[in-house]
Amino acid sequence: MNRYFGYVRVSTARQGEGVSLTEQREAILRYAARHDLTIGEWFEETETAAKRGRPIFAEALKRLRKGDAEGLVIHKIDRSARNLRDWADLGPFMDEGQIHFAHESLDLNTRGGRLAADIQAVVAADYVRNLSDETKKGQHGRLRQGIYPFRAPLGYRDAGPGKPKTVEPSTGPLIRQVFELYATGEYSLATLSDEMFRRGLRTNGSKRVHKPKLGAILHDAFYTGLMRLPSTGETFQGKHRSLVPRSLFEDVQRRLADKAVKRKVRHDYLFRKLFRCRHCERCLVGERQKGRVYYRCHQAGCPSRSVREDAIGAHVRRLLARLRFDPKEFTWLRQEIDAHRQNQVKEVEAELPALERDIGNVQSRLVRLTTAYVDGDIDRDTFTAAKEAVLAERLRKRERLNELRSNPESTTDRAQRALELAADALQSYDSGTDAHRRELIRTVSSNRTLSGNKLSVELAFPFSELAFSPCVLEGCHSQDDVRTCSPNLPQASGIRGPKKCASILRKLLGWVKEQKAAEKAGEESDLVYQALTERAA
Image (cartoon, rainbow, N blue to C red; front, top):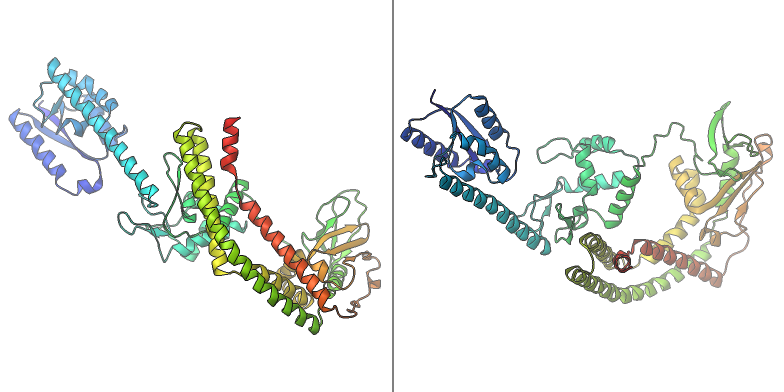
């Protein structure tokens, strides 16, 4: 038998579309004709030889080992292997004289020929390692320029070599919806996949985006404007337009860590999860009995009694009725709001340069952090984590800068919305849906508890400052004597003067500033110096 196998290979599908495979076949056939060999079967592969695991190459060696052919003819040494393990696998076959290289004039039966072949194999393996290093250098260079050198993720498209990724008009808004819907807590990855498929989200291959792909999207900081190198975990600031605010991305990360999904509500009663038992601190559970809804604590032995839904509703309306304003009061409040709006503009004008300085300071911290890493003061893991924290902080400050430039009156506007909410609270409660009523109660009230047969409800700050009378309602009757509850609502007596209105608005603005400061403080991160301190310790 004079039957041989022929093996040809290219590294990529694009190379397979060219003439390389044809040229390799012709070279092998010329070699076979000169040496009186018959190529009985061809093995063609489109796979890189830099790593082990080529299935067709392994199949050819397996068939050769079984004796299905006398030998294997390959075009060149670098077509057979570019890693030394695959080259070692060919060693036993070369010892038996079963391997032939059509392009190489090497006698593999001699010591010198084998040495020359081994040297070429080492050169081929080193070529791959050098190519990998050069590729990584190029990728790092692009990343430092803010250019993502890999394929654009879903929601973006490639704009050409050396250019930032651009938002895909059809899928970009849908990716934003993926984050927004998951942040609500009402979707698991499976149900989110179904919902986004219904809304039209598809992969680049026009297929459904399944759970693993959705999980990868929700973890990908690229959508916030950052770029993370998969091999090392390093983070870089990108020049592409972000699809997701950093705050929304962090909310999603917390929810992914908790994997908390809201259950579907079977009995959507009006005051569900709004009132707690003062003794057990458990939520009162609603249940329907004889056509009426009652709320009670289900803890065994609890002294609290049940209370009817209409009795709670009467108390809530009495509470909201205290949030009323006379037309004169509104006139004075509007004047105060206009004055504070002018002051707010001045404050924003002062904050803008401060934020720009902070962004410059963050950049300086990044330089110092890189210097510490180069000097060997911190290890790679500490550097990677601290660098990502600094880039995230810079991104948040830039978002704040953009927010101020687009809406410099946000503090005053937020206070004005609170006033409007308070003025229309009772009317909004009476005309709203159950979901709207629940949200309204959560916003304006606090300390909603039941102790024995007494219900206690308080107005939350700053709404407590807007009420005419004391902010606590107690003494709700139990289910046995609910008919004795007075349906009358308290009437506002007197008008608050300009000074009182100005005082109320100052407190309201102070509360808004405290809320915003707390939000800002929660977003700020000092992980860089913390990491350096821990490292020094």
